[in-house]
Length: 196
Ligand SMILES: [Fe+2]
Ligand SMILES: [Fe+2]
Image (cartoon, rainbow, N blue to C red):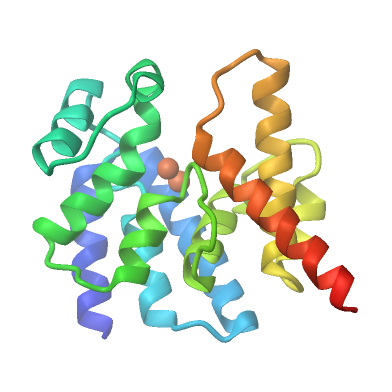
């Protein structure tokens, strides 16, 4: 296990900037803490966290190309905000070039920026760890950090609220998956309140 993790760490280090690699290491530490707390596979969390920004240094053209060559469709919104594709592109590289077959790891990498409905606990952890690693500083981050230790759904919802709030204020495009993810979590919460 150690060797595999060390191997992926070396690969990532060569592929992304030093600044991004430092961020990746902070995401890894944060994700490990959350995995410990929520009883999620530490091996999987380490691989997913290490690879989540693997495609971050690629150009917009390269990102679009990777998705389209693998048979995926790039929407007009994604063409205007190609940066959003670094998650899906990294998941494709992880599967095709690095031989990762675990669907939860691939899902964690793919949706770490947008979120999605019905994510695995692993994917929620990577999504949240990316948003709350120690150098992240924005209004509400402390509340998300506290929620993350208790309730991953709540932390994801708070993080989506914060992202969408930011995008609305900046009049930026909102990826439909983020809306889907947020609606899913709110419906899940409302259903559980009815049952209680
Ligand atoms: Fe990212
Ligand atoms: Fe990241």
